[in-house]
Length: 140
Image (tube, rainbow, N blue to C red):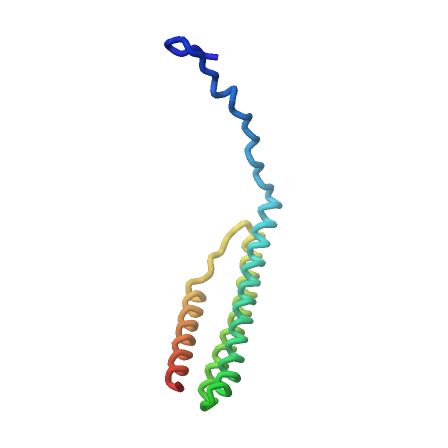
C-alpha cells in the first residue's frame, strides 16, 4: 500500500488487477497451410455457385422468359446461350485458378488473379446485364 499526501491509504493497482493471460499461440505451419487451403477451397466453391447461378439465368432467360412474356424466342435463346457460356467460363477459370493457387501455396507463394481474367468477366457481365435490360425493355 501507498500513502497519499495528506495521509489516506491507496492500494496498488497491480494488486487489484487479475493476472494477464498468456498471449495467443502462433499457429503452426501446418495450421496456416490448412487454413489457406480451406480458404482456397471456399473460393473455388464460390466459382461453382456463380456458375450455377449463371446456368439458372441461362435457363430463365432462354426458355422461361419468352414463354412467360409471349414474345419472339430467338433473342432470348441467344441471350440464354451467352449466360450458359458465362457459366462454362466460370467453371473452367475457377478450376484453373484453384490449380494455380494450389501450386503457389505448395511453393509458399501467392499468385494474384490476372487482371485480364478480371477484365474479361467484368466486361462480359456488364454486357450481359445491359443486353438483358435492353431486351426486356424492348419487348415490353
